[in-house]
Image (cartoon, rainbow, N blue to C red; front, side):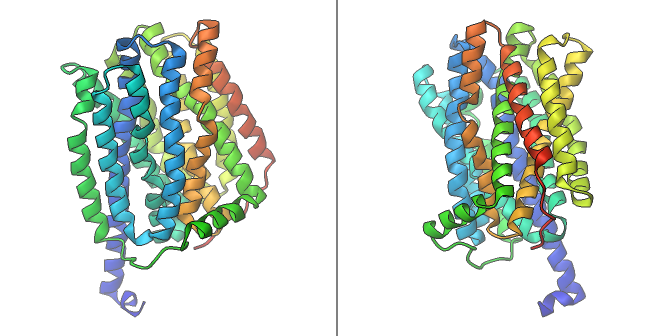
Length: 408
């Protein structure tokens, strides 16, 4: 600590904080270029190419969600047990993402693809707990802003991903796009690992020492009623958002007959607004309260999702897609900041994994939405289902008394 009191030590400490933030945000952006390109552009092409019905399409999303939720819980343990290994975990996350997407490109039919989809989310799900806990430890005085900065990287990826993949689809088939995805992922993985290993400056063991300790931490967290409410609210919000998010590209592509490029432009522009909203929401949640941001944003997202089926395909539809796109991604990071407040800066990877792992409770939501869409023979019914589900967490959080923001 004495070294850090010196001017050059202070500069070094600040520079390492900036370097860590740059590495984490860059890696998060790369992750979401892949994830958004797959979800918004490649998946509708898979549905068309393999002649899938809505429930089959929804089952592919469910397979991704199921393994992603389980992996997130494992990543929470690893992030707290081996916090000094965060650079390796983030590099491995990006590398595995590229590998399994490449494997999906070689799947010859629906059932093989369905099996591969169980592994596609392993890499992306491994990223968040060690990344966010590293930021939370380095920025305890502005946790909401730091977490939102991480989210801004994700939104940047969500903006770039659909447009970039749509451009590639102009001269490659969807299978070929997946097959070549390994190589840039490996390059990005090495870059993030190299930057983080010289910026973390924390070579101590983590805050849990065993699986028993980890599950004990989970149990203690869930006995806190504020944390339990946040987990349930996150799960319900994820259930509604996943139903709307998975079927919106299909609705634009098939029902409205948009080209892949037009779908990409719509969904990418929807995330552009989030680039500004994300840090602003984080800043004001630090300045005022998490509840002041969460409740009205959840209410707006639910209401606009319910309006999707009746919106005309011009400006009204674009505005609804843009606003819901900006809010739905940004709000998740406010959930994380609120949960970190409840935990008072302890077992931070575990907290992050708990919030991301809450999506495991919403695993079957895209499949349920697909069944509903098949039953009514109208994909718009998935939006009504999703919007209705999102009303519930809005009511829950309006009632909940939030804790004061925690310190490190």
